[in-house]
Every structure is written in structure tokens, then in C-alpha cells.
Length: 369
Image (tube, rainbow, N blue to C red; front, side, top):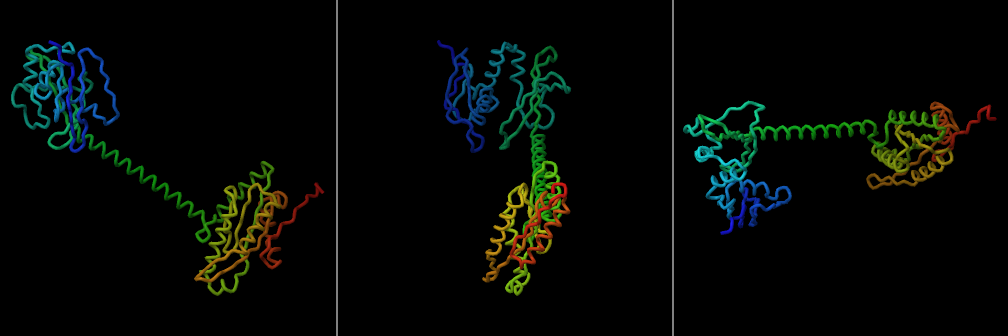
């Protein structure tokens, strides 16, 4: 007669509620055979081994271990497993195993002397295992300590089961609270960033504020002084409002400011800067640009402003600008001189009747002359 399979599984199916963990599984393992079981997370490997070790019941199909049916001979499977590991219990141990009863949520004292609980301290070499299974329509997590001890000349097996579900629940609640805190911190950081951007932006035009622009201008002057590079500064001012804009009042003026902001943002690079300096005056910083290039770019912007159509309540509104352009270090050698040169050029553009780009005069040092 041939030896039975070490493991024989036929049409095994196991479910957790409506979710199948195993479905129609079949395989067999010969005694002495090396058998590998591979699968992804959640593929049912742990469930299978819990069924093979009698920790989970067989719901559908059949499972035999070393010739014993797991469904009807769970105790024999466990005893045979001890024997195969070289530790076959004697008759007293077998009787102790037979006498033990599994009561996961038993309340009150043990029913008789067959229940033996061995106390242990933290650090004792007692093996701890964790198990999870469904019981009474709920999922339970258990920490199990099994100890073989001598009692009155008998070797007995004691198992202490501790329900760790409350601890796991507290850990999950703590993780959830930490996640919520992180989400709140991220939201607060985003709000601070948005608020900071609003503080540095003019609400009517979307351009930088004067303080932010002055800071960028100081940095550009320092950089150009150290690296002997040039940049240009432009002052832009709205010309006198047309009759239609004046007649429509503040709403029309706000619409003109919005259009001016869009044009300035569209005609500057990421390295440049534009801001609203006063109610009708704007500043543009062109990094790494000389006087001629700045004049060409601002002339293009002036033409766009002159041809820009602003519509309010079905009426077309137009506007124009005057510009003064200066460069560093050709027309000025300090930040104050640069601003004064721009101011002089802007005054010259206004004297010409507006809608004009005027350049600051290039300064010649006495030594170079």
C-alpha cells in the first residue's frame, strides 16, 4: 500500500464574508518532496497555511495532512505534526492536548483542572505568535503564547490568548489622527503660501507690490555690480483717460488696470519683474537687457496698449501709456540714479504728448572722456 500524500488539497474554497480568499484550489505534495508556493499579496497563501495548521476551518472541499482529514481529525493533525518535528508527545502530553479546549472569549475561571495557565514576565523566552480569524461575525486579532511546562510530573501545554484587537484599533485611530494632522498642516502651508502671494500681489492688476519690486531691484543692482552685467528699468504711466473712460468712472478705470496688468505679465520673462508702483504708474525690471533692447521691447508694448480694446457694458474703451527707459550702468551707476534717470525719461515722454517711449541719456564719465 502506497504512503499517503504529505498534503492533499481537493477543491478547497474559503471566503471572508463575500470575498473569496481561495477558490477551487487543488494540489498534492509527496512525502519528502520540496514544494514551493508562490503568489502575490492577498493571493490566499496565509489562509491556506492556516487551514493546513487547523487554525481555520475547512469551509468547502477537503484537506488531508499526513493522511488525516483536517476537517474531522484536527487533533490528530496537530499531534502528527509534533511527531514529524521530532517531538512526539508521550501519552500524558497527548492526554493534556486532548483535554485542552479553545475558548477565545471565555469569561470567568477555568471550568476544571484541565485548564493550565503559566505566568510569564516580559523578556521570558516564550514564543509569541499572532493569529487573525473571523469569530462571531467579527474579525479578531490574537497574540498567542504557547508554553510546554512540567506540572506535578506531567508535561502539559499551556496557551494564553490575548485579544489585541483593541490595541490595533487604537493604533489605527492614532495613524488616522496623524494623517489628519499632516493633511491639516499641508492645507495650512498652502494657505500661507497663497496668502503670501496675495500680500506680494496687487489685487487690481495681479502684479507685484512695491515692496517686492524694490527688493528685486536691489538684488539686480548688486548682481550687476558684481558681475559687470547690464539691466534696464522702465517706468510706465497711464496717459490721461479718454472721455468714455472718464464718463464710466471707476469701473472703466478698473478694467483698464486689469488689461494693463495682463499686457505687462505677457511681455515679461520669468527673470523679469513688473509691479504697480502707484495708482497709475508701473515699473518693469528687464534682467540682462541693454538700453536698445529694452527700448525695442517697450515700443512693442506701447503699440499693444494703444491698440488694446477694453470692453465694458458693450462699449469699447481705449488707453495709451508713456514710458521712460534707463539702463544700468550706462545711464546710471546706482539705484537712486537709475530711478532718477527713469523719472526724467518719463517726464520727457509726457512732454511729447504721451503714447511715447523716451530713453534716458547715456552718461559719460569725465575720466573716460
